[in-house]
Image 1 (cartoon, rainbow, N blue to C red):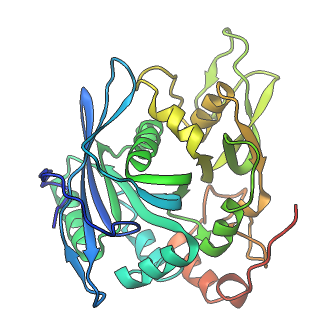
Image 2 (cartoon, rainbow, N blue to C red; image 1 turned 180 degrees about the vertical axis):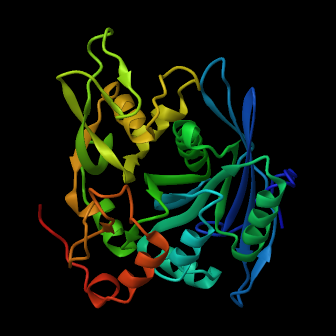
Image 3 (cartoon, helix red, strand yellow; image 1 turned 180 degrees about the horizontal axis):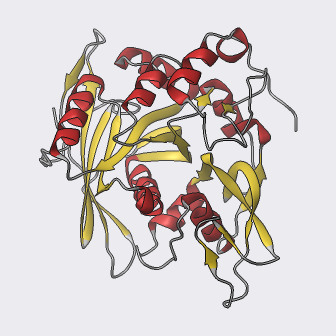
Length: 335
C-alpha cells in the first residue's frame, strides 16, 4: 500500500467501480504539481484489496491550466469533505473516528453512500522523520488521508488550502468541495441535505459568514496581530472551521497560477478575498457555526471563544454522548 514516503507511480488502469473508495494521495510540487493516487477496490465479499491505480494531474504554471494524463475518471460524489489536520492532532483524529466519522472502511463507505459525501483527512509533510513515521503508521492503519507534499505550517495554511482544493478537484467530480477543520462536531447527514438543495446560481460560496476587510485603499496596512485590515469598509467571508465552494468556483481556483492571487495570514480571509474577484453567491447559513447541538445544527464549535471546539479531544466525545447531538432526527429548515 502506498505510503507518504513511497511516491511510487503506477501505470494507469481502469477499474470498473471506483467511486467513493479509500484513497491515499501524494502531491509533488516541483515547478509542476503531480498527483499520485492509490485506490482501494472492494470485491464482492466486501473485503478491501489494495489495487493501486495511478493518475497524474498537472497544473502548468506557465498557463495555469489543468491537464489530466490519461483517461482516468474522476470519482463522482455530491461533495468531497477535506478535514484539515496536522501532526499535533492525532488525538483530534482519534476523537473524530470515535464519534461522527467511522474508523473502519466499511463504516466509512456506508456513511459516504448514505450521504453522497466523501471524507478524508488532509495533511501536509514535515521534515521531522519521527512524525512522518507516526503518520505512515496511521495511514496504513486507517487509510483515510489525502496527503499533500507541502510543508505543514500554520503560516502556510492558505497555500495548503489552495493545494487541497486543486487536489480534490482532480480526484473528485463533485457539486461541492468542503473545507472542514478537525476540531468541529459535524452532522454529515444534515450537511448532505444542505448541499443537495437546488440552487440557481452555479458559483456558490457557502458558510457561516462574518464581516471581513475590503481592500479598496492601497494605503491601508494589514494588521497581523489582530488579523484584520485597518479600514472602514468590510465584506462577508466564511468562518474558517467549515465552508464549501461549488464546483464552478473551485474550477476557477484550479486554473489560477500559484502566485497570481495574494495570500494573507488567515486562510479564511484569503479565500474570502478571492471570492471578491469572482461572481459568487454568498450563502450564509448559521447552522454551520452553532455553539451547541440543536435539532438543526450542522457543525458545532465554541464560537466565539475558539475557532473550533476549545478542548476538541474531550468535547467531541462529550457531545457524541448527547442524544441531541448524535441521535436526534434530521430536520430541514425552509430558510
